[in-house]
Amino acid sequence: MPDRTTIDTRTYTVTMGFLLAPLTSGVRLLAPPSRRTRDRHGRGLRGPFLPPGIPARKTRSDEFDRAAVDAFAELDAKWHDALKGLDVAVDDIPRMLPRGTDPEDWESVQWPDEVTADGPVPLARLMRAGTDTQGKPTRAQIILFRRPLELRALDDDLAELLREVLIQQVATFLGIDEETVEDGPDA
Image (cartoon, rainbow, N blue to C red; front, top):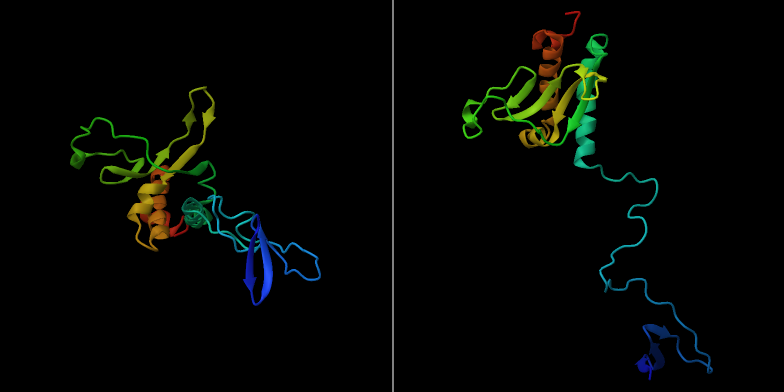
């Protein structure tokens, strides 16, 4: 049997979560349920989180990719002809260990020139052009390791750290010193 509720001397009938409109002249009308209902089943919001036309927040990896592209664009503007055969890639974490060192003794880690590292942690790596396992030619690549770089960069220093790492890697790729890379070929 439906509950009867009296509010302001009017009688409302509540049936299955719907509030029936006040009884007037014997006609019963269903009132729509309130839009602010409690989320009882853990389903959360329905529909788009943001309205169309409003940009959503970018992820950390999107922001890192944008910062890496901006840092490389500055060097590419100076050295475009020399860097035509070079690609820049981003990997989340390094999947490599230094050769010939004891994994227990991280203090004595020696990395080759193609790796820019902070102690035992590589930040970037230059992969020279060559052939892959199927015998297909590959282009030279600078691989930036996102997580180690983000952890070592202070609040707004990520762009500067990326720039320094890319200068070191481009200098290794071109076989010249870092100051020349920073100044440009005409200096």
